[in-house]
Image 1 (spheres, rainbow, N blue to C red):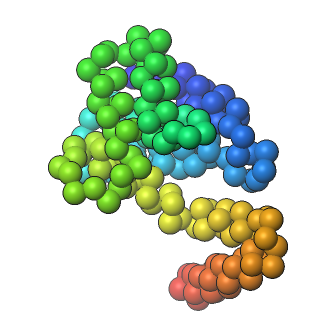
Image 2: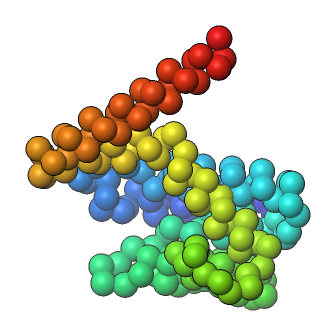
Length: 171
């Protein structure tokens, strides 16, 4: 399957999100692409249906609506979009179910391998260096400047310590 059309849809959808107004460095498209790359790596090691994993990873954050869970809105948007481009109904159902479950990473439910891979890919980005830096920048831009600046300083100290340790290990 050629994913380029789906990637363009995700890019367009991400550019319409309001989060970029408050935090111009926050970009759900970049996050989605990192999750997509993690998902492909995990699938290569663990197996699973590549089309299901890639489509769910690419579409896991395409929806946002105040007052509703993002996973629910994203699943609806994804299902409608996939149907509009002629994806097989059984594939659409699997992708929609994974997107609906994505927010419930602590579930005890018996989930498919594909669902676990997408959840893990999302988690791996959440704890990655880029996300840590992004969170620090959000904190620094917070309206409650004194509290935010203190938290920002703590996070920057963590990042600087990590970079120092990494340099020690590499060189």
